[in-house]
Amino acid sequence: MKASLSVLCLVLLVSVLEAAVTTKPNSGIFIGCLRNRTSPENPITDAIFTADNTTTFLSSYVSYTRNKRYSSPNYQKLIAIVAAKHVSHVQATVICAKTNGIQLRIRSGGHDYEGLSYTTLGELYTKINEASQTLAFPAGVCPTVGVGGHISGGGFGNLMRKFGITVDHVIDAQLINCNGKLLDRATMGEDLFWAIRGGGGASFGVILSWKINLVEVPKILTVFKVRKTLEQGGTDVLYKWQLVASKFPEDLFIRAWPQIVKGTKLGKRTIAVVFFAQFLGPTDKLMAIMSQSLPELGLRRDDCHEMSWFYTTLFWANYPVGTPKRVLLDRPSSPGEFFKSKSDNIKKPIPKEGLEKIWKTMLKFNFETENKMTMMKELYEVAGPYVSSNPREALLNFRDVDIGSNPSGVNVDEAKIYGYKYFLGNLKRLMDIKAKCDAENFFKNEQSISPARVM
Image (cartoon, rainbow, N blue to C red):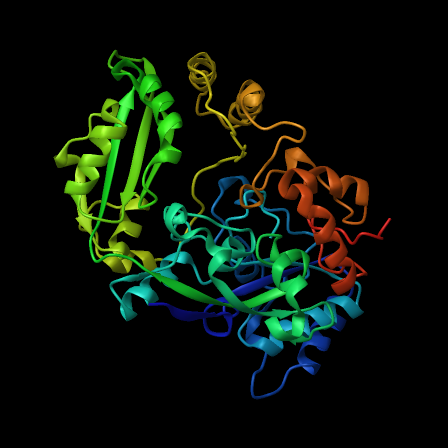
């Protein structure tokens, strides 16, 4: 059985969608344009925040910021924030910005790892749970991630081995293009519909909604979390996991997450590899699979917890078993940790000596901010020999401006540097589509898709 669900931005995303308007021209002209292009039935006045009221302006600007790197922003170039409550608000913002030479930045959930940018995954999962105990959506494990950015970047999660990734289940979308027109799949065409499902929606327009197919899952799933330190053979277990993970039944997903933890000796630290797993079935079947395929993990029945799919989303978000489901509706009230993220594509198992080099580098980390950024770069270099090359591939949803940046938004050669790392052979098609739907490159940021003919 298949069921579909519309993730309506009009109710859930657009009501909290924020377009940060930059390059400071006359703000009065821009605000007046917004008011003239919206109707009294759907007034935009309450959706506009300007620097005239510093308190509400800054509050709106930093809300949903999930990274302390951006908790003290330089907002001097901003002239307004539009928290759209109606489709017409988005259309007016696009048209008024374009006619006044103003640049837009579109924010969904505030999780962009480089801060280039509100229904969250947690809210989506809650809505699904209200409708059914056996329907699910194959998306990510962080409940505060915005649906809009997650899907448009080709988001994935713990159901991907069985059901694929998010964009495999999108059947329609609504988008405001660079001319302020509202398009759906039929009117935007299959090329643009393909591009926004993995190519990053912010390069092509403002995505208002996604229509998705849900997948059917068993009533009972099993999850576990097991930690193995280096002293407990963590390196050996991780190496074996690399060899067998792709051979598990497709109902089983196991993620390995190396972390720096306190050692057994006072003042010493070590590495612990935490194995998170989800199985579409009961504990008995999972135990049989693990004892045959990865006995080195030493999984015990007491490590396993049976629950519905919805409650596995709480488990993956690191909430204790038994946490009330309403926690997934909580909106973040303050930035999370200071962090920098990078990604790699590992195409063959990392040898044990490679893992040991990575552990040695990780253990140099301390908790001083500047040192974190320096050590991240060193760790990236150490991992280099064991990951993809020519190019060294990266994942768009783990945005990293270190791999290439196009501040002007118009230099094709610069755009190809990061674009090829994110999209490989799909880059040319994405650039051709961009040239057709946004030839003047209105929708742009430091890592957007450039039109093929812009120089």
